[in-house]
Length: 163
Image (cartoon, rainbow, N blue to C red; front, side):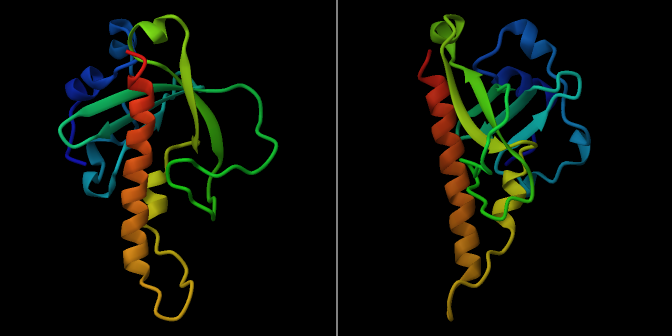
């Protein structure tokens, strides 16, 4: 991801009102983020514990989505739909997002299972275990990074289709 500033982040949210955009709290340590290690910018709002934010750079388009953690607990240990991490060093929760435009204003939402604190970029960059003799772990890591980008883009597109 390319470095972003406060103004671009707030302007990127496709499923938010002007008031919601203005009230977004940027992530802790925002000024020190290593943008080269991020495929998405995701964080939880410290003031609103059930709210999360996702900002994805889709090439020529920067798109932000406000997420809400669903109430209740998932009974089994789920897998993140974005990074598909199987070692699960963190919790995975069910997030919902209002669709963009009129559909979102009418209450339509889309949901996904994602890492609770958006650790996906870090998860896909860990070297996977060697699956067999001659297994190319670096190529596998690069495939996981690309898959994360595709999964996030697909989710963002599902939110956008509401407009």
